[in-house]
Image (cartoon, rainbow over all chains, first blue to last red; front, side, top):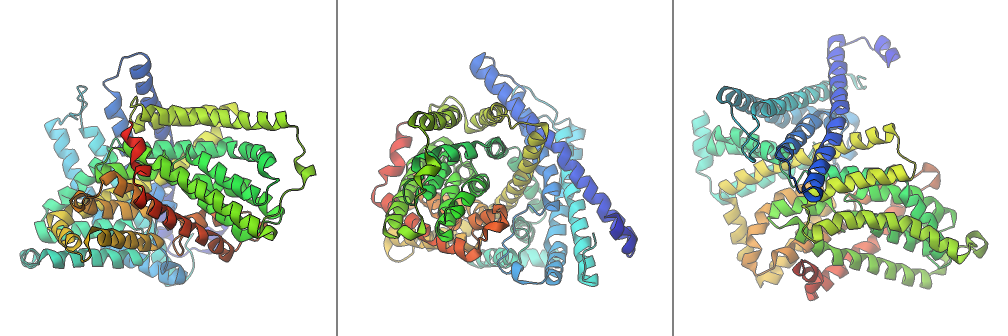
Length: 182
Length: 450
């Protein structure tokens, strides 16, 4: 990795951006893996206290939903970084890496960026509205505020958008230079 | 400009909109870009052209509903449970025990692969975990004992793919909310078809190996010379904890004690305890299992958000009526329609990921099923059993990818071996579909007892 950095000193700023974003995304993955454990524990606690002790909690349902929401949306960046978003690659596999890079860049510009842009935009609007109106989550009698959760979703969308940009930069680099950036 | 576009698109007939929307996701998916993106983007863009900026709020609300969906919460839990069981090494123990019992028969090791695939299927909800386990545990022994490579890999692919049919299964968990059928009923409905398939696989292997002794020789007696009681004890030691796990999860759902999500949480904890009991548990195992769970969860939730957006826009634009008109007006009556749906599902399955098929196709078809006079639960099971073939039909055969990914290179397994091995199972599944059509009670009996 360090050797490559010395040898390939072109596009140095782009390179730094991509490396930074990749670190952020894998860091995210290592944070939310604890939330998976949290989700299991919250639900297990609820099951035990309801069925064994006959005392259901009022907070478990919405806590677990919030956990799933953060795991899901924050996980998109990590999943994207590890090429986990499933592709139908019957034709794609037949192309050279360069053609694949060009396809991916064009599709990113045409469809992916507009999609994540819309998500961030609307997500931000709802998060702000939620802070201003002191919105509550109303599925149980617990009534937690909705604003922190909605803000988490926007952060998740933003992380995903950053990872999409990093992937896009790698593809563009390959399309021009015919070799991998990292 | 935008008004003009709005005007233009709202003047289009629902038929034209159907063609444009499905045409564009078809092209978008074929580019090989992550499936969710073309589906979601076509939904949002088309929604914007048809209904204006309201479509932007739509995708947000779909994402919100998806990532807080209580039913989908079972996905990470069952994936965690499957990955944890893979780490527990239980498949190896089970294989070693059953090897002693079945090794003496021709094709015995292939049959053991199907049996372990079936037992694992009742513990995990994904095929990746089952196939990886079987490939690591059963494939080397079969190759070593001069089994035909096609026969060996076919048994692993078919046995491992049962993971997503026999409950608990991610496919059923996703299908339920999408078609508005209770996941518990789907679980019970999938039991008999799942074991039926497993049974047919074993029959096929026995007959084939009986007729062609060369392809799967029996293991010599000196390699399996163990006293009867030791053999029995080995089986009990592996089967008992697994049975406990299966019963704790499925029993709770069957008797209506717990929702699938709650049962999944209990299953995740029990699988972890099992790994501790087998002395395979470390902090690193826990972290790795958790990390690999994220990827599948992120993937499913993104596709779910995007597809529900697409479907909402499509249905609001009147596309549902178009599909309904087409299906109800199809010549040849309801069985011709049914045959057409099955063929389309089979062909799509060979090319597209099953998650995409379920999320896009099922919500559009589900409201039409009762109008055709079919039982929704039975129909669901026909689609799900049909999709079993999708794992085994190239070019997009998941089972093959997972097997190739996990197979040690020195075994020299080629793609051709795997494809040759998988094809007979596609016919067996097609045959079982015919059985389920002739005897719908195979699907409906168990759920009716709930």
